[in-house]
Length: 322
Image (cartoon, rainbow, N blue to C red; front, side, top):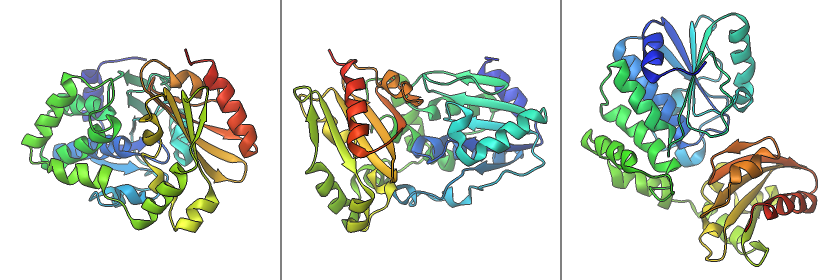
């Protein structure tokens, strides 16, 4: 059922113990949405915890508090809130706990901003916008909790990462108004800009150089692909989280409309990150393979041999190039 954020706030305030879930391999908006909401519930005296299936990625490890996320939810919560997650399968290892809660008639809430959201919870609020932290910020206002410095820092992380440092074409006045509110609350804008988009280890720099030096172009340069293999990660002493943001570089090539980063997760399995510049709907491309996300930024998984995967992907992409 679709409902308003005001209705969701009223349901949350009636809960005794809340578990906040977000998607597997969480990014800044996922963590930011979850922990900003958790801060608000702490202020209101509502017992809660953030649950994430994986460890904190190295690129976000500088953000205080993320290490407090639990991998398993408490068994006695009476409400589960998912944030920045388009369907229950994206919860990864937490999807079983979510489905168990559904069977037990425990209330579930879904607050998200992905066009591909399946409205999988009992109560759903889905609004397309630059970052889900924007939806969460409004929810916090309905909850009657203040946006203090700690809450604002989490909101700003989500806002900054999912808007591409305010560079995406869905950046609106609302984005800047929330950023201004975060700055007013005491967020150090330079600190987060530097740590999220500029700071990098020698290992990441080496991996970046190795990856971009082998960029492939298709269709007169309108489609660019970078491939990150497990061997390259090992040779550079890097981990998968260090590839965050790699896909944005090929999109900066003037002829490129669609860019893809192909990350080898294990033999025969590849995580595909897709971006587009002006007109191509990469959500439709990702949806072809069971993925999804946004019109300009989406992802999916592909399986097979590397060249076979690239052939399938390039053929699908060709259908969405003018």
